[in-house]
Image (cartoon, rainbow, N blue to C red):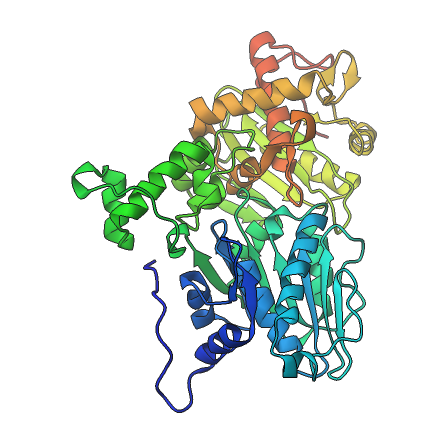
Length: 501
């Protein structure tokens, strides 16, 4: 994407709307610049680029310190003080960011021309986070994403969600409530720096086209002050030459890029985005090796069959005489929350043959497991007995179906001792034998499986780990079966340890 240089004011009698918005902001609003001076808000390259493509619904993926939060707040502030009956809500990711954004907008109001500030933009009150303009029946609010029911029970005309990738708690639920409050024809902007290939902002970016949102990608070189020591062409690396050829960067920008890499190391591609795909993958929090996961994703082939509305995928059908394992990670079965997940492995080869991911109650899951075990040569059935697994096991017992046992107890128990070993095994195989894994759903969950509080590996907020945990369990049991050839107290024969009634 070539950087778009700002143009001068149009000489046409009626300038286009994008120029009108820019000229108006530059004429009416002042901000505190990085140097500490109070100056007019002059649109930079990134802000011009945004305005030239701006739609009714927008999502902005940006590098750090591009001035976009300020610019979007400024545009919505102008709409609020010029359009009667306007409710504008700016949602920031932390309390500190909320206070900072309110100070920025407060400063814009304080430095408006006197006739506007004392006229229709006169405020009746302005407490922390709220400005009310009674002459217009309009209001500008700045709230924290951490506030319970942030923005709900309102009719919002302008919605600005800042640093969405860093919102606390269930960001997707918070955003859904805000979207529901957006009035028909209202304007919405979701903007953020990337924060890993998972979470609410990532999903919104991926699904933007389907939701009718305009994508805006703003790489770091759109900020004109991001310059470093000049690096001449004869010193460029092949990667730098390709970047210059593609983006038209100058020698000073190559110098700045090298400074970024020295300072931020592996996080430079995330904090100072260059590519709308790679910047999401650069998060250092992922439990698995992202390079291995991404490489395998590019090699995947479509499944041979898709059943149950796409929930059950098959890559390798059963082969007569081979041994298989069906591993089930149960869930509650409600319309929300976790999915039940089932993995089918070839016991001797370790290859993923089939995968189910669907919201099923314990009885429904048990029926699917029985069918899969029958389909795959009377496969060994493994059910995690934690939580909802007890219900699945009870149903299987009622049907007379024998299952894997651990120390005389039906089912597999995932606990503090076994969980790290299971996940470590999966991580090693993803690096050393990636061809064993066929599922895009599984690998996508691996991308959003991160080190949480205290370093505990878990699904990122808003993501799922059902396929990850079912695969980790399947691999752990397979390793036990292969090494000991002891599958349960019910039967010890192979290749058909169980008979499904």
